[in-house]
Length: 446
Figure 1: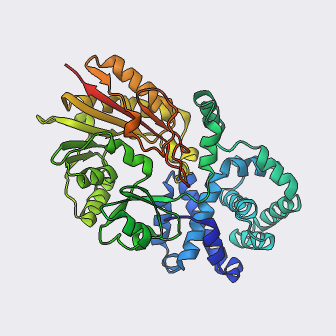
Figure 2: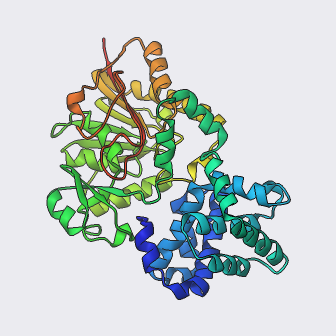
Figure 3: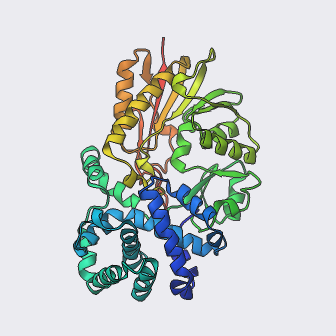
């Protein structure tokens, strides 16, 4: 679903604020609990909530969109919101009842980031809680609103991401960390779609902007699955940055390519559209099922295997392999703001170990003189630069295959002079930015 604050807020009826609005906020609280306590991805938590409630599924699309906007806005600004709440709560945040805390969080999000009228914020917040907590929520909400200037000062002076990540980015990206954080706070992230053909036609049809020969950027709100051309399999969702690794494989018709960690299938679809014969491997059955559904909709076929790459045994080998490794996904925060509240610094190091193992396993499947593309949608050097430096030292039959600037879209601002690509969330010179990415191309030598 595409979020667009201005359009959604115009469409949410004024009487919804005090009537059905309480229900959408109740669902927002439930979804936040699923995300922050049960570690569910935003998309998954939203989908579960939709299916769980027949009432929610019958809401108008603008009300559903507002619910999602409220959840994502709260998550984007959660570090700042919690800092503000510590100034107004008499007890520490971790001692505040969970539901009460979530109600207060969405109240602050509405007041300061979505500019909801004060009376609506207080009234709906009090409606959401049990009678034992009405006094607390009413009192804290009104105290914050009475001291708006001070509250805004707290929001401005607070960190924007958890301290461990802020500290890490300051060290790794001293010149860029402000831009990385700003991209995360972008409230209306666009959706990029990859079109099979006739890109100009579909850009006009979907009211989007053509950004490459096969890619369109959409800014309007609504369910992706309800857009024209979706059911007919004319296009699929794939972020601009995610499209770059495949272009660096220089695919020719009938090339046999191995796509590792392939589900949900964006890169497999892109490879097939270029004429490649693809073998796709992933160890997650749910993601494989989604991949099969996606490819069926697109009328594409791939040799799909549900295997753990580390244990994958075959006599076959490939001259072109792409490994989009599992990672912290910190490059995708503009669309997945929940990630920074679910990850810990220790996760980065455990993921780096997994990536190292997957790289070694992938290397065993590559032919001599073959090319391996390694990529992650992470901003962490442990999952990018350091990973490849370590691999090149470990594998004496590997060299870095330099990625030339001529191979890269001119709208992509690359300042890194290394032979790999480090893409920041503001590297793409186009409204809406892009996912942060790391891409390296490695060649196997005798």
